[in-house]
Length: 411
Image (cartoon, rainbow, N blue to C red; front, side, top):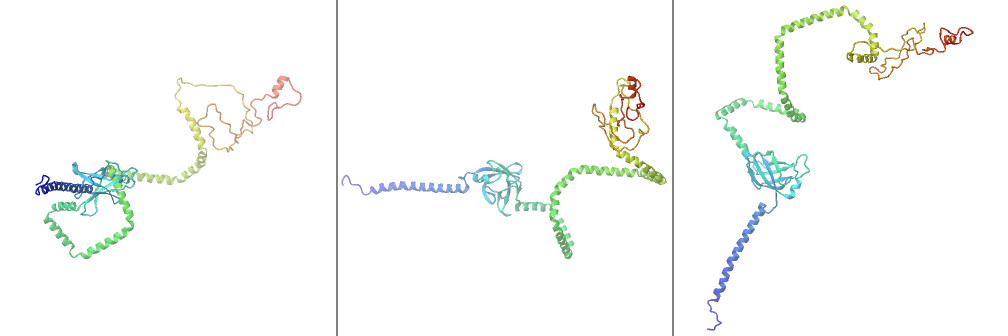
């Protein structure tokens, strides 16, 4: 045997040992890869690798068929999912939503939220509805909505029906059904006639359906107004009852009052009937006077209002009369027949600054056809160019008299 010779039985043993160590490693790597693929698939399916924006919905209840991973829909498009459901005190529920951040800008901040289902027995989902007036702002991260409507499940209907049936006694139910059978037996024609009459009535009511809908819409506001006014209405009814009781109690006095009123009316008829001609004459005579007063009512009002200054003044500290006197040139005397009074003025009523005359003002002189007019031409207050003054200064003048009585034009 040479030194470099290798025993035939040992070489295969070394090669087989390396292969045995590599195979377990390859198997472990394959298992890890398969586990990673499964984990990534599950994470992708559950959306663990997708970014989401948290939004909370508060509701009176979540419903029996609301589960996590339920869809959040807006306009028929999924915009998120239900991440979890939290029970709150008082039977309420909080739905934590995971919204798609890229779709938040299309949902208004004042969107409405309903918990509904596509069918009666289907699973529930969260539906976000656009309001009548969408807000300019969009939904933000962490916003909280309140759900006002949750679709009723068939289970709930059955539960409520069961609770109602549990309160009904079978014996009384049997008696009720028997009574209904006896009442309806042999009356099919009448019932059909009733249904036909109802159909005809509804057909006549159809044209007024819009008005009926309007009346039903405004009925809550009207009923609320009546509810607010109910205490006053009850008080008025109570007072009416008391007034009625008082009338009943005082009916004898009321009868006496009515009889006295009838007697007074009879006497008044007799007085007016016997004196109707005299009353007519009085009214006829007063008519011109009342017409004149009506024509001058404005001037009379101004004059009486001007007199109000004096009765509004307080009493003087020192009783007496204050008199301011002075001397002035006299006006020309009245002459007959030029200055005889006349009633022919047609100027109408005038207030002449009354009732409040400004300080230092003088009422204007109203020229009218009344006979005397101290401001007429030739009627001077003071005559300097008179015959008496000439004779007193220069002595008697030659010639005839020079109008010494100053009638007409001065001499």
